[in-house]
Amino acid sequence: MVDRRQVMSFRVRAQQLDRVEGTLVDTAVLDLGVQDTGPDGARWALALRGVDASALSDDEVVLLWTVRGAPHLYRRADVGRVAAAVEPFTDADAGKRIYDAAKPLKAAGIGIVAALDEVAGRMRAIVTEPTVKGDVSARLAALLPEPYLRFCRPCQATHLFEMPFRLAAVRAGLELTPGTSPPVLRRIPAFHRAADPGDRFDLVRAYLRLLGPATPKHVADYLDAPVKDVRARWPQDAVEVPVDGETRWLLAEDETATATAGGTVTRLLGPYDLFLQAKDRATLVPDPARAKELWPVLGRPGAVLVDGDLVGTWRPRKSGAKLTVAVQPWQKLPASRRRAVVEQAERLAAHRSAALAGVEFAD
Image 1 (cartoon, helix red, strand yellow):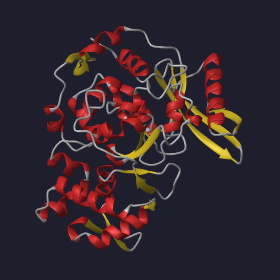
Image 2 (cartoon, one colour; image 1 turned 90 degrees about the vertical axis):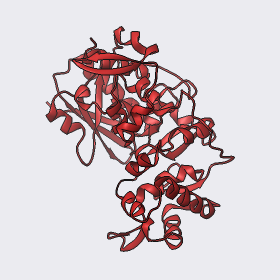
Image 3 (cartoon, rainbow, N blue to C red; image 1 turned 180 degrees about the vertical axis):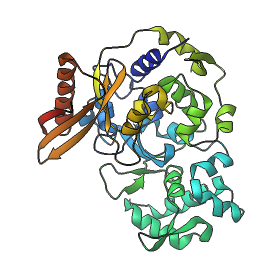
Image 4 (tube, one colour; image 1 turned 135 degrees about the vertical axis):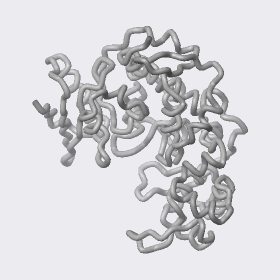
């Protein structure tokens, strides 16, 4: 039997949150992708894992729309295998991943994967130089027939559905230009999608390696894929692990790692850090009220990680060159832990090239 504490400790170590320093090559979360949403996104997540994120260049990393259509950072050297890994498993999987955009395509007798290929081909022809997303969208709307399009009330214009647009970008060999808003798409130099992602980049295996022990439904929810398709690709070397009475799975090579004690580290996790992306939220935060606080519908806070457990939330407040961090603890934090939180807030301020104005603990 594996308990919650062991699951949390396993993930801290698997995701290298207890690491002091590391490189892009040996940073495990880059195999699955590091979501880059908000000011404390991918580069902060890498900094928490010991990578000097301030020194990263475009030659080393690439930003792509991939899992759930969200922007994720990867090693540029891996882009071909990543493109193979994020391919929909089946046409049904592709339909689930593009949400409501699938309905008109199906009604018109257009296969979803074929539709993504059609969009990708058009996008590739359009983006011959860095191009703003809105310009790409407008040109696509003029080229594609009605089943691909929707009327956007806020814009009062007809656009391609959002998810096919995002998921087709990698198929087209397009990346996102970092730091651009609205997004600017550009061609990936010498892009070639690999025939097979290999075990390291296989999304099911990567989830189990970094967010296990898990069930097929956890993985499917993370990918927005049908459970059936995930089960069909379940690793043969996955072993059953009982977690608080529920049967879950780990890769066999990781089975003994759940018995090892976790590290005593304090981290201010960004709102979309991979640690918080696990789909067994009741394991991460057993209290439903606290879970609601950490994962609201809009405006997610970050999470305070102390000694392998989530003990509160935090929000940044920037004014000019000064940064204040407001912390909402879920339990009484001893003075030593508060000092550790302040040290991490100083680290965050330095990462943001700001001076820490203070840390406000709600009592």
